[in-house]
Image (tube, rainbow, N blue to C red; front, top):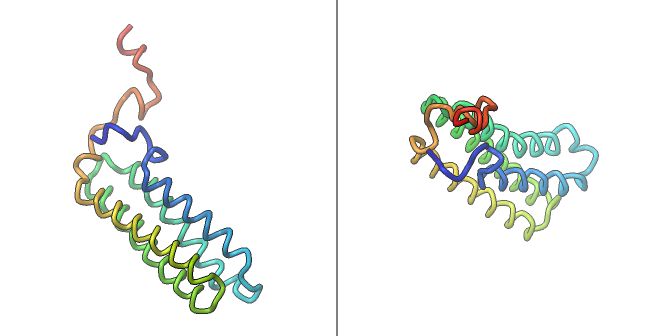
Length: 142
């Protein structure tokens, strides 16, 4: 069991994914109106989905195959986001420097996701009763 994370919000990969999604949202505010239902919508959806899939994976960590499957979905959304960042760069909606930074951040997220998949057994375990079901240590040890 990962002794550092007590919930998905504690995972560095989740925090990084959330930060990238916010940065993409900020950049996409400047996309032209004709991209509202295409590039803007797609890049926002895929970038936000990375963190959502990580959260879902955390909820399914009781079953290792489900946990890995959700992390795989997060990685697929990450790759889709990379595609849309390249598209935004090609169309000059984001600068080369901003696209490069986003792509580096997305690659870092991919490395973290692959590491979690490779070490999935350390994340998957029986639920921690005092955390997962809202109990406190005092209820069990008093």
